Image 1 (cartoon, rainbow, N blue to C red):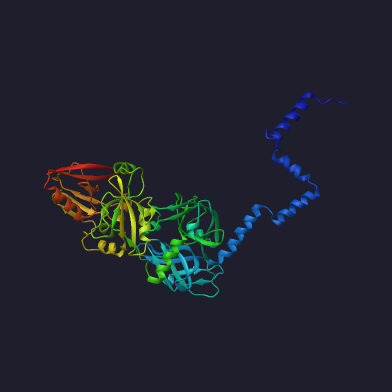
Image 2: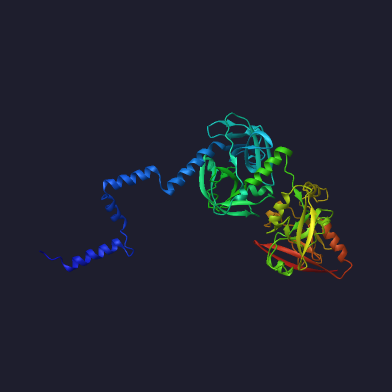
Length: 492
């Protein structure tokens, strides 16, 4: 018998060691060799199991297929053509879902307001899953939630069922349906990755001055064209209306936002009953830049709640004795997270409801009550003819400044948040007492430690200070995206 050379034996052993690996498992191509050596009975059994779909993956896949089959007939593709002065005819595409309402008979299509906004009825087409094309009979919309609803009539329409968005938890699985990039009847799969997202800049949707921001965040793929389509749970129910994405590229990057279904239902029911959405008003201006340093100054243990920087005269807040620098930490029994959380809670209350509030004032808790009123009261005050013409400003003689009340669109153009308030400096006289410290486009936030948001505010502050020796202005300056505040002392 011939001896196998030791070198050859060592080489074979080394090769086997590489194939098996440290874990004791064969490398893929050895597995293929093993697969070819399966006996016929084992191969037949494995093949049958695959056909029967007995694995968990098969069961999950079958469930998703059933949800798609159940929900797809309710999902629609929307095309709009609108005329603009600069661009001519512009086409907007989006998605929607067929629903019913307990407040009105018939069938309706829910979508985003920004999909159908400013479009004539005849230029809106709704494409069903079976190929039919419908034209809406009427459209209602709400700019503060970016929700729209359209009345439709046709035979054999399939309405989707509503789910309870309050029961959603982070990690729950959901499906986003719609027409991304115009590809109708598309479905993507993911989870709820966060809840209660607020203060978001949402492109087209953000231009609608959203008050009700309480978004669901999902990693289910949402792309342009998905706007208005439903977010579906594993029961095949609508738990949200997809509205926007966070993206640097314009496509899906794993962060999408949906309006919770309970908010959508509240909005569409009000639209169908009243033609608008009644919203409550508290009568305060809240600090959009509430920071830990301010919380510490006010002796609050941590950054929480919403800080009041202005109380409107004869408002619910004024009648409830809410004051400047108060922090609302509880409202109607709910812990307040931040200013946008409070704004959302207030706006969804029934008008004229009396609620309990818990304030933090001067280092201690103070209990109070307020009766919220209709937000149209705020709109009437805002539209009162006391504002100066845009771009002209108002001259404050004692300061040698021309200022203009900061408006949301103007604030955004200048790099501030849309909610930012103050007086924008449009001109500084050469003989102004603050000419060395204040310059064009500075924002005057406070005068004598009191927030100023109107011409009346600054004039009253200056008038009172004239009897004293000096006046302190708090001024914010935006330089290359860096915002810094400084104090300016005015000596008469």
